[in-house]
Length: 111
Ligand SMILES: [Zn+2]
Image (cartoon, rainbow, N blue to C red; front, side, top):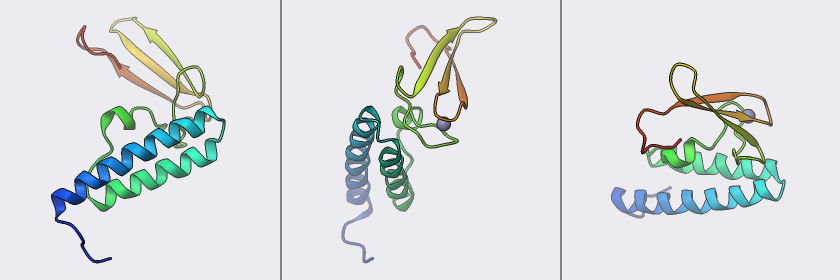
Protein backbone atom coordinates (compact mmCIF):
# COMPACT_ATOMS: atom_id res chain seq x y z
CA UNK A 1 0.00 0.00 0.00
CA UNK A 2 1.51 3.33 -1.00
CA UNK A 3 1.95 5.89 1.68
CA UNK A 4 -0.79 8.43 1.23
CA UNK A 5 -0.14 10.63 4.21
CA UNK A 6 2.87 11.77 6.17
CA UNK A 7 3.52 9.68 9.26
CA UNK A 8 2.07 12.19 11.73
CA UNK A 9 -1.13 12.39 9.74
CA UNK A 10 -1.22 8.61 9.51
CA UNK A 11 -0.97 8.29 13.26
CA UNK A 12 -3.72 10.81 13.74
CA UNK A 13 -5.97 8.83 11.44
CA UNK A 14 -5.14 5.54 13.10
CA UNK A 15 -6.02 7.02 16.50
CA UNK A 16 -9.40 8.03 15.19
CA UNK A 17 -10.00 4.64 13.62
CA UNK A 18 -8.97 2.84 16.77
CA UNK A 19 -11.32 4.89 18.91
CA UNK A 20 -14.18 4.25 16.49
CA UNK A 21 -13.45 0.51 16.57
CA UNK A 22 -13.27 0.65 20.35
CA UNK A 23 -16.70 2.30 20.54
CA UNK A 24 -18.14 -0.33 18.22
CA UNK A 25 -16.50 -3.18 20.11
CA UNK A 26 -18.05 -1.96 23.35
CA UNK A 27 -21.45 -1.78 21.70
CA UNK A 28 -21.07 -5.26 20.26
CA UNK A 29 -20.08 -6.63 23.65
CA UNK A 30 -23.09 -5.02 25.28
CA UNK A 31 -25.25 -6.56 22.58
CA UNK A 32 -23.76 -9.95 23.35
CA UNK A 33 -21.83 -10.20 20.10
CA UNK A 34 -18.53 -11.13 21.65
CA UNK A 35 -17.09 -12.62 18.51
CA UNK A 36 -17.71 -9.45 16.53
CA UNK A 37 -16.24 -7.34 19.32
CA UNK A 38 -13.10 -9.46 19.33
CA UNK A 39 -12.81 -9.08 15.58
CA UNK A 40 -13.13 -5.30 15.92
CA UNK A 41 -10.39 -5.19 18.51
CA UNK A 42 -8.22 -7.40 16.36
CA UNK A 43 -8.41 -4.89 13.53
CA UNK A 44 -7.81 -2.02 15.97
CA UNK A 45 -4.62 -3.77 17.07
CA UNK A 46 -3.61 -4.26 13.46
CA UNK A 47 -4.02 -0.55 12.78
CA UNK A 48 -1.89 0.22 15.82
CA UNK A 49 0.82 -2.17 14.65
CA UNK A 50 0.85 -0.79 11.16
CA UNK A 51 1.48 2.73 12.37
CA UNK A 52 3.76 1.49 15.16
CA UNK A 53 1.60 3.01 17.84
CA UNK A 54 0.22 1.30 20.89
CA UNK A 55 -3.37 1.02 21.88
CA UNK A 56 -4.00 3.74 24.45
CA UNK A 57 -3.83 2.48 28.01
CA UNK A 58 -7.48 3.28 28.61
CA UNK A 59 -8.28 0.74 25.92
CA UNK A 60 -5.62 -1.91 26.48
CA UNK A 61 -6.61 -2.18 30.13
CA UNK A 62 -10.10 -3.08 29.14
CA UNK A 63 -9.24 -5.88 26.78
CA UNK A 64 -8.55 -9.38 28.09
CA UNK A 65 -4.99 -10.31 27.24
CA UNK A 66 -5.62 -14.01 26.92
CA UNK A 67 -8.88 -14.18 25.00
CA UNK A 68 -9.26 -10.69 23.57
CA UNK A 69 -12.71 -10.06 25.00
CA UNK A 70 -13.71 -6.53 25.92
CA UNK A 71 -13.97 -6.25 29.66
CA UNK A 72 -17.12 -4.44 30.70
CA UNK A 73 -17.72 -4.50 34.46
CA UNK A 74 -20.82 -6.48 35.33
CA UNK A 75 -21.04 -7.88 31.86
CA UNK A 76 -17.85 -9.58 30.80
CA UNK A 77 -15.68 -8.85 33.81
CA UNK A 78 -15.75 -8.88 37.56
CA UNK A 79 -14.00 -6.17 39.48
CA UNK A 80 -12.91 -6.55 43.06
CA UNK A 81 -10.96 -4.09 45.14
CA UNK A 82 -8.71 -5.88 47.60
CA UNK A 83 -6.66 -4.26 50.23
CA UNK A 84 -4.53 -6.90 51.84
CA UNK A 85 -1.03 -5.46 52.09
CA UNK A 86 -1.40 -2.96 49.23
CA UNK A 87 -4.58 -1.81 47.59
CA UNK A 88 -5.22 -3.33 44.23
CA UNK A 89 -8.01 -4.05 41.82
CA UNK A 90 -8.58 -7.51 40.46
CA UNK A 91 -10.30 -7.66 37.12
CA UNK A 92 -11.51 -11.11 36.14
CA UNK A 93 -12.58 -11.95 32.62
CA UNK A 94 -15.80 -13.95 32.87
CA UNK A 95 -15.21 -15.32 29.40
CA UNK A 96 -11.98 -17.22 30.06
CA UNK A 97 -11.42 -16.75 33.80
CA UNK A 98 -8.14 -14.95 33.40
CA UNK A 99 -7.47 -12.04 35.73
CA UNK A 100 -5.32 -8.96 35.89
CA UNK A 101 -4.21 -7.07 38.94
CA UNK A 102 -3.78 -3.33 39.01
CA UNK A 103 -2.10 -1.74 41.94
CA UNK A 104 -3.37 1.55 43.19
CA UNK A 105 -0.46 3.75 44.06
CA UNK A 106 -1.96 7.18 44.48
CA UNK A 107 -5.32 8.32 45.78
CA UNK A 108 -6.15 10.11 42.57
CA UNK A 109 -5.54 7.12 40.35
CA UNK A 110 -8.35 4.77 39.60
CA UNK A 111 -7.79 1.56 37.71
ZN1 LIG B 1 -10.53 -13.53 28.76
